[in-house]
Image (cartoon, rainbow, N blue to C red):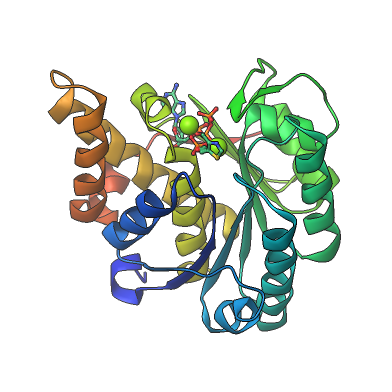
Length: 262
Ligand code: ATP
Ligand code: TZP
Ligand code: MG
Ligand code: MG
């Protein structure tokens, strides 16, 4: 099985200004090559050269959204996976409009969001405060419903992550609550899932599951080593763990369940 570190996929990240450096360092740590490019004069060329495209709407502007659509179409033309992180979906009408536009014009392979964001895309209101989830609905039912309605793979993250294409559904329980106390861990995860989707292209659900296990085990290890110091040390150690963990090691600690629905 090909690993991220062997394949070194080029990931074109169109992400937000809060998490840019963290995302680039996190992707380098897992063995991918990140590149950030936003200008409409070059996004089609960059997306065409890349192995995966990440569209993250965390700090949106009309200009960047136009560039994202150009990049998304170029990626679609090459069969390159496009991953959408709908940061803050439901928080403002502008974000809802952007998401609709991207989904109408680009063939998105996978959407990764917290439960509030995914619920907001389905039109359920009052689920998001800023960029943080405020929802308590069952993430399994939510992921299945969203996958069927949006016709792509959905990853709902939280204490239990759920991955679904509407037919097959998997849960991952790896991870640590401290991930919610460091900004950008959801956003970096979108990039990591993009890298796994690029390299392990046989099954998008399996690729996303492996990515979530790897990410979660790295966080568990980082917490063990930094719990007496605090979350700033955890953030640094998390990057160390992403770079040192192997996929085989991570698999030994996986907490994955295949959900059987009657
Ligand atoms: P939010 O803005 O609501 O924090 P996010 O976009 O940052 O959302 P998260 O849902 O926090 O994304 O997911 C980021 C990572 O943190 C995922 O790997 C997820 O599994 C992990 N995670 C989130 N909450 C927990 C938790 N309570 N326990 C363990 N891992 C968690
Ligand atoms: N504001 C706009 S984007 C962003 C903030 C705080 C980063 C959100 O990062 P994450 O990964 O959802 O914690
Ligand atoms: Mg977060
Ligand atoms: Mg987020």
